[in-house]
Length: 140
Image (cartoon, rainbow, N blue to C red):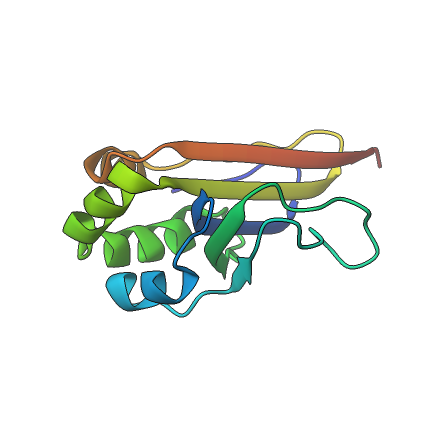
């Protein structure tokens, strides 16, 4: 059974399409997903943060609120994307298309793993997987 160490506070899994002059409105139809966020080059990354988006970005994100780690929510989105493999391959030929997993913890140490099924699905999609983690480093 998948497990985690250190208590994951927040995690999310996304498909991200980025580039310049993107036809942002078309990706949702091609992938049968309503975007979570669309940004144009020069838009603020976050409210109140003086950083600007370097490229256009289309994102669809699912929160991964599983007490045993992000694996099950990751697979839900991967299974959906598998049904749109041809569209993803076409998009990847023109735009930067990647998967992104973000995990955050309040503890000094955290770990999680992705199941072999998840890894197989990522490989089958033939897309890069970006993983980032943030630990606030509190020790109890």
